[in-house]
Length: 418
Image 1 (tube, rainbow, N blue to C red):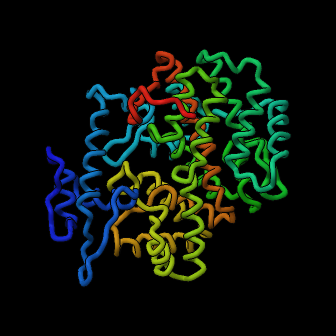
Image 2: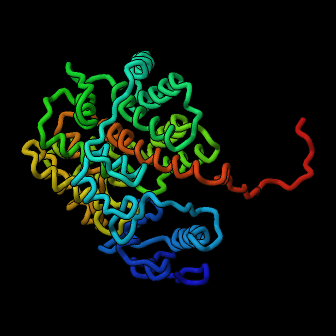
Image 3: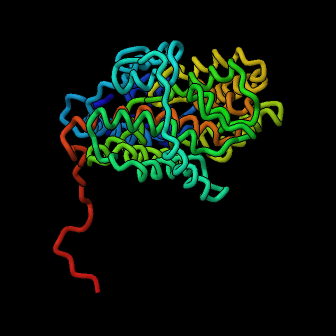
């Protein structure tokens, strides 16, 4: 990145992709990733095929990148959090040093959760919740409006389970692990069944399936669901995970920390992405082509859901793993073709790879699930990671997640308001 704040000026203050990349000190594909994340806006000049960028907008992003770099590890800033849980590096991600994709391929979600929590996979790990806890959580969830979202239900279930646990304020590692092994299955058990069956035994993915679709389960589909849960269990300091660590820093109990994560997850910029991709996929299937659907998204000024990821310049490894499994599902063929059409059509404007949200959309759409199913899968899966981060934060100095505000209001003394 250049060491001054003034971008090279062109006529009309528009920069080419090459100039923008040089000024920001990144590769051209990273510039397109910025566009997909909404950090930059591009425009094609009349009669031209290449994208151009507003110089002032590029300058603002450069300043922001420098501020964030000031908080990188070793710089003395406050934006870095030491963690032993997840590393994302060179297009791959690792749980406690082990390749997360390989873990998900070889181990169940419960075993991956145990690995995140303890550093052991515990072969055959199975989570069970006491009947009394499940009953309390179900009554609380059943009292909600029929319009309640899945995350609403999960958050209420977590609060109800906490109220049933008089030992919830015990933050010792053993107690928190016991809470985790009860809370995760309670969240699933509290969800209403999608059909006539409500499975409450067997692997967690089997139980969750009956909350997502009324279709009979088959082994290939259950494998996709279990793998998706494991792949989504953690992803470094996403916004919801940071909220969990802030709550844990204040010594909130594990139920409350997970509730904090669920609250942030419900934001439209975090957990809802798979639902948007699901609806877009259905539109493409309905129209038979992605062209008008993508055109409508771009015309409305929206980013195309399910494409690009700020942490991966190339392919999202979670999407790659899930697409590989989805190709083995006969019922997913049409949705897979639609997803490929979306990627190909969008590449004419911006070359972006499919991310895990698009892979989840293919799975949920081809399995007869609602658009909100991806968000439910994400929330249940990520609970394991949230617990891992809470456990790690309980071992740190209390209230360390307390940044200082940079006051920019009027300087005192000011007259009192009348």
